[in-house]
Image 1 (cartoon, helix red, strand yellow):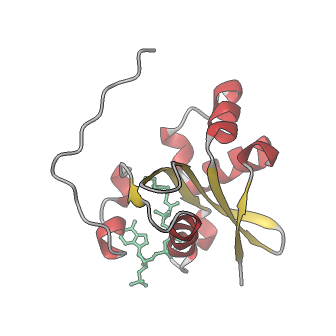
Image 2: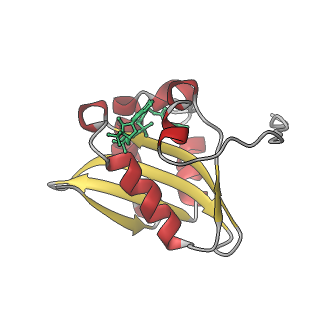
Length: 134
Ligand SMILES: CC(C)(COP(=O)(O)OP(=O)(O)OC[C@H]1O[C@@H](n2cnc3c(N)ncnc32)[C@H](O)[C@@H]1OP(=O)(O)O)[C@@H](O)C(=O)NCCC(=O)NCCS
């Protein structure tokens, strides 16, 4: 059985996390080739949950939270070899438990659009995004 725990993002081994992003397919939609930027993404996230099995990193949830009102779940990734066993559900649960009064908000990757309603998320009809300046 895997274990989920809250960790300090900056304390993680960036190469280990990069390997997980690749093993989950999320690397296709994240700037994994820009290690400086990726390292900043990891260190800047103030709510990071990892899932490990026998010490091996098999899942991660990387969020930004104010701890009281809103948590933005930026990335969730589970190694394809361990998907559909409940790891993702546990990562989301642990993310919620770290800031229980905060509402979880996210933008779904195309591959996961059917996942979120399946585990209880509601679609928001007035979500808006503004592209990065550069
Ligand atoms: C999306 C992802 C995090 C889900 O993690 P997971 O550990 O495989 O999911 P779980 O095992 O917790 O799944 C819980 C339930 O959702 C179902 N489910 C899992 N992935 C699903 C998907 N893509 N579409 C629909 N249902 C899905 C499971 O079958 C399970 O159903 P059950 O409770 O009826 O048995 C994982 O598949 C992943 O890393 N995908 C690639 C990266 C990605 O797209 N991340 C999302 C970025 S927004």
